[in-house]
Image (tube, rainbow, N blue to C red):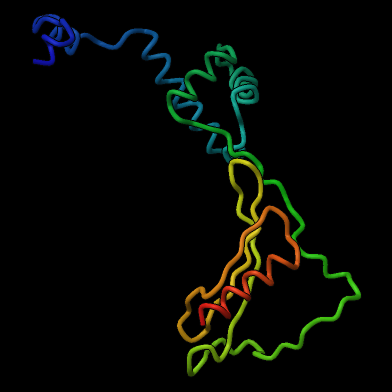
Length: 167
């Protein structure tokens, strides 16, 4: 049925299966193996097609950047992109610091006896999103949260207000 849909005869399909790979297919497979070897070596997967092409050419492989890019894309070999470092905490300030009441004892014997909070960043397609969370140590559940595109005191106050309203 598939042969009829694709308009391919049985003999044509059978001949194609018996046929040895073309010179281009063999060359592409060899290039993929070499790229995987170079990609996994000391370069830790950081090379894209421009640097990969230069590295292959220094090893005596005759190739162009476009060919290497096409082969890498077909083989799903991608360069790792460096993660941008973002400073999240400013510890050098003169603001008052709350007392550490829990002293790293993160267990509670009853609900709502101890809550912990955290603020984190979430990367989205349109930029960073700030998320404030309030968790109950007894149930280990999030009892309040708030999200915004900027980190303000309102973010934390809204998360705490939600927790108070729900508990």
